[in-house]
Image (cartoon, rainbow, N blue to C red; front, side):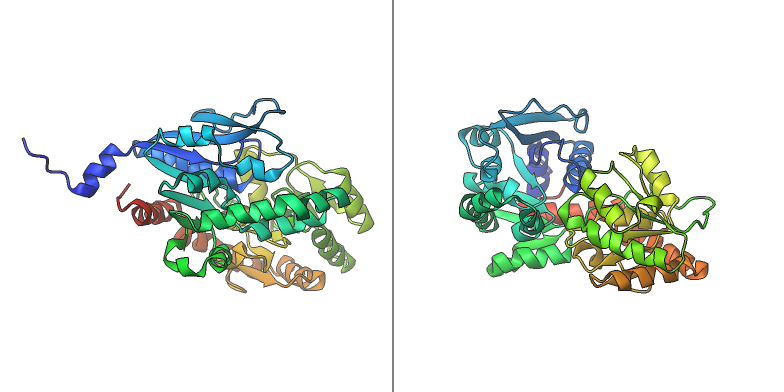
Length: 395
């Protein structure tokens, strides 16, 4: 009997073992979200998915239920203090890579794809930032000896890895246009190989509340102790809001660090701030739904998925011009974009807090933006196009 499958259909049925290289599951954030979204979707499409990540030999085995329903492999890494070792090529990686048909690297930067680049095998990269965007503000907070080590040894090695990846046999997909531009600047001849694949927001889970209560409540979800999140600007603008006599509150997910508590006290805002701890998905949805405005004061964001989740809940976002949010915030239509100026941010927030019609109009438009551009259906269409671009086959 003849085979009626086309060449692309035949290749698709034969190529089902997929390896995802990513960060350890204890690294909380957008990388985990991207990995779970992609891994679960590929499983639905019939792929046998394995998630692999480095495991420093001095640390205990990662104990997290993040990937508990997926097959995982940890690859030992020695001397993790030298960060280039975390994403270095090794015989262990090469042996593992050979056992799979399709290969994907998911990370904050492209560095996690370095073992794939070294293998020469065709692969897909899904990243959120370039090396400088990811590390600059963390470098500024390092002790002097760490900065010296970073400048002389670690950073040059990471730059070489990044250049290796952006020159390799791959297609690179970024979560925002800002990141795509930054990656393209590293290898200008690869414009056709560097495209945007945004992270979707779950528009069926993150929904507006049935009854919204206007409560002068601002919020932020994320690791505010990450230097890129710019906690100093967050507290400075909040102090200016309180100085106008506006009785606002600022709710922040996660637990406060001593540094954050000291910073809040220095700005005189500690009495109006609440730290909500680490929230379950349902609690996070209620958190978004309780807000009047969501605030992003970051220096740099690959996308800021939390902004999209808030918008899906009908909450307008006021953000600095920090990269990713500029893709989905339409100034004065579904939110506000500001410079890194506490007075400008405070003015925008105060105006929204005191004008319910404006707030509700922005929130309604915010929800529509996410539904139209960042739904899961939109993502699966974009992913299929990315898959075809990488391997000349459909999912």
